[in-house]
Image (cartoon, rainbow, N blue to C red; front, side, top):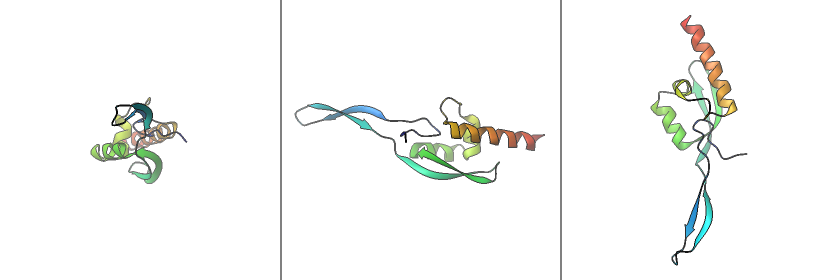
Length: 97
């Protein structure tokens, strides 16, 4: 399973461990991913996603999963999140009509 946030696209970064003698060895910095169930108001159900803690804070800041998905671009979302976004957009269009 890849270590990439399904909402923000945040993945691993590469850097160095630096010793006291200033020796540098390669290392990776992994995002803090959590398996969470986010509630969708439009769908009326929970959606299971693998999201970074930064992504969770962003979702809360934007007023919930539905608002976040409508504002987010498709290129940063995972296939699962794009599917949920499409369902939410469909439900919101039905309510508006």
